[in-house]
Figure 1 (cartoon, rainbow, N blue to C red):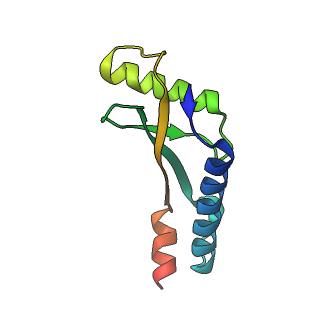
Figure 2 (spheres, rainbow, N blue to C red):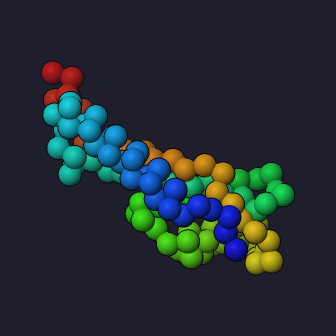
Length: 107
């Protein structure tokens, strides 16, 4: 089970992408050339260790995120805790543009 307001998470990631795309466009960067990665920091409720899980798209499904977290947890600790509830601690969006675009934006 995953503790998460899915609609709010979708809105947060979409807003971050739109804001970043606007910044890059204002610098003359073609947004299509930008690589964007979304991630969620997750943990089981009551535990202190946090694992970072990649998010493939802004409108991800709850089940996909939970499966990714369970796989990351298994890879790190080699244990399944299906009876525990997972939660998203934070969401992150990062983008990178090609070196040529970085140079043009500084010109």
